Image (cartoon, rainbow, N blue to C red; front, side, top):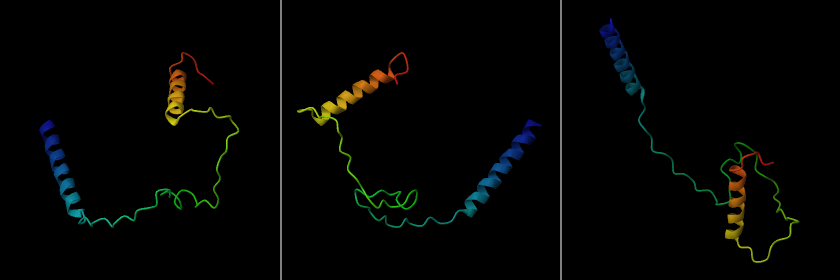
Length: 91
């Protein structure tokens, strides 16, 4: 019985593979992609409409003189890791 089942399964797989290979269309070369501008979002017009206005956020927080970008990133990383590794949920 197992030999019959295995033979039927093999025949079914060979038939499916043969029909799938016969149905494949020749692969067409992809059209040359048009490079977009560095600031342009590729999802504009697909997921959401193109923005009509932009604004720049200006924080009211006082900045620390002499704080470089690397120092700010390090601060955020340390605080985030402390939050993740805490024994309780930090709000």
